[in-house]
Image (tube, rainbow, N blue to C red; front, side, top):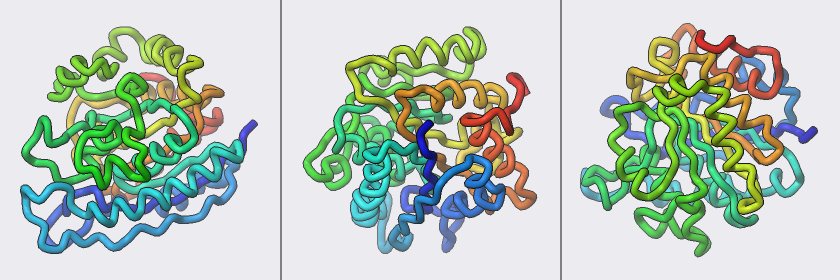
Length: 305
């Protein structure tokens, strides 16, 4: 049994301000989940905090590229150092974000160690890049593109290790059936499993089938990226893009449990939940239950609820 180690990565550098003069509240994710006693319930060890630079877009304007890019480029290797240390030690890091740009830290860490895959559980593909959009700017909506080598070199080629992920080593779960990136991803042969497909084929069966493609000798293991916006806004409204048609808690519980309990899974990061949008804390409590239930039977939610 590997030691679970909880690491806080409270970076909001990759999101747009929710309103002028404000900053995204997802940097409070780790604190909110700790209030739900997630460390104790996981039986985890403390991995500390990787403190991010200040959120400051300065004089950035649309068309200037990724904002906070220098800060993200500085933060990513520091987060990667912490993750790499624990993966090398045989631990299982659970990284509490933060926006989705923290996934770059995990991908860089694992790229240093070998060839690893990514299982992304996300309501959107986060695949915006200069080749398909004129609105590049927020790295939290672009991290998969950046991790696979698409975009500005100061973020895609840290330490000369571009790309951190190969296209063929990425699996996407839970994107909406109407996601505009599906055609491009199909052309690139990046497998996607939409919400509708999970329901049509059965979450457990389809998750197990895709998992078998991650448990091959081709890669050294895989990382799981969980974005809270994969859940339907009826149960998870506390995200920056609460798009309809998401997974229900029971469906996510089965999917997440299937992936993280694989001996080939080497870690998990959790992103995007914003406690500022959850004044009663109910969405945070649900997210904590789902994470704990992925590792232990305590906190699981029956499929379909």
